[in-house]
Each structure stands twice: as structure tokens, then as C-alpha cells.
Length: 276
Image (cartoon, rainbow, N blue to C red; front, side):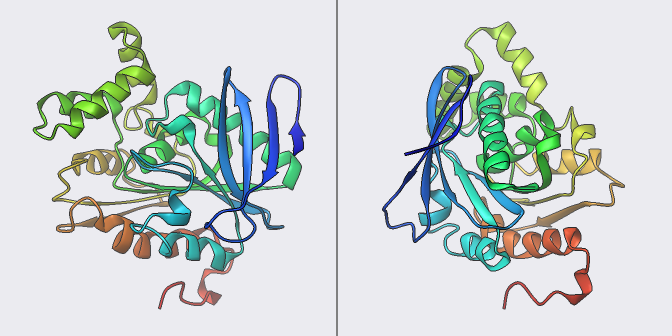
């Protein structure tokens, strides 16, 4: 086991054998008093992708989930980018202490591997984590891709009170647990984590997608953010009328990823098509 950093942030790297493919290693770290892990697939590239998993997922999602694999992983691989996929303590709400932990880990990765920039990607609540992290630590985020995100965690929590699906009760409980059960502290954390309220911090290129008939995360989340970012030249919104909650992970990613890569490329006109 190899140590990447010391001092008040403990982090180690161990070879990892699994069905996730060659070159994957497990990064184990302790931050904010808790141990967590991420799967990384290092390359010598100066650009790495940071992936945040969806609700109910874990760090293996981009390597194994049939909803996004192999599309997302192949897209990252084709660019030669390194990859880090966080477990985020099994939570996909990105409360401040989880964001701080990821920030510490990325700082160690940046130093050890010589990474210059991180592209953040995620779908569903993973997309919510991408955007929430982006307003918390915008200096870490070179660009952000978010498929069907929550952009106001407080509104999402309120929606769960009336939603008929019992799964939403579990989501509300999880949000309470990780954002603090105290009503006053929770409201303060919700306001601090509202992407819509802090859209001015999204100074990096941002691309989102959403379907109007999404019953899990209503499209108003993306619509409101798009309204706040109106006129931002490095923002793009792919909005579809039909497709439910999962279409953005497929069609949306096929539209959004090429736009993002071409936008950050210095010679976009010379790039080959990213998808056939």
C-alpha cells in the first residue's frame, strides 16, 4: 500500500482486482474524521474526469452500471483521461463535509499525478453532486456535465414530503441524516448548497440535460438553473420532451459530452466525431 499524502489528511493507494477492468486502483482516505474510498484509473494525461455516483450507487457505478456502462466509461477512455470515481460515503447529496473530503482527496491526486484539470460528470443525484461541488469548490472544476440534476436540495426535500413513491421517504430520511436533523441547521445547509441560489459561482463550462416528463427529479430544477445562466456563453442545456428520468444518461450524454469536449478543446473544428 502506497501513501500519497500525510499530515492531517491520510490517503493510501492499493492495487485492486475486480471485474472493473485493468488499471483500476482503490484509493482509501480519511478526512473529516471518516474513512472513505474512490476507484481511480490513472493515466499520464493532465486532464482527469471526476465521477459522482447516483442515489443508491457507489464508486463502481461508472464501471459496472448498465444504465451508463460502457457509454460513459468508453467516452472517458477514448480521450485518454484519467478517472476518479468517489464513493462519497455512500451518499449522493454532497453535503458540505462530503465535498470537503472529496476536495482533500483531489488535492492529493493533483499533487501525486500532476493533474492540471478535472472534468466533473454525473447523472441524477450524481449530477446534483457535480453542481453542488462546483459551487463549493469552483477552483477545482474545469468543466461540469450534469444529467437530470437537482439544483435546489431544499426544494427536492420539500417535494419528497408529498411524493407518492415510498422511495422518496427514504430519500428524505437520507437527506435529513447527512444534512443534520436540526431544522435550523438543515435550512442553512440547504441554502448554502442551492445551486440555483449560487449560480454565479459556476464560472466553468457547464452542460446539463433533462426530460420534461421526469417524475423522479422534476425538470424545473434544470429550467431554473438555465434561466439563471441565461447568456453564459459556455453553458448548454439539452432539454427533451420525453424520455423520463433515464434518457439523459443515454441520449443526453451523447449530446452533452461531445459539446463539452469540443468546447474545451483548443481546436474543436479538427476533432473527429466522438460517437458513431
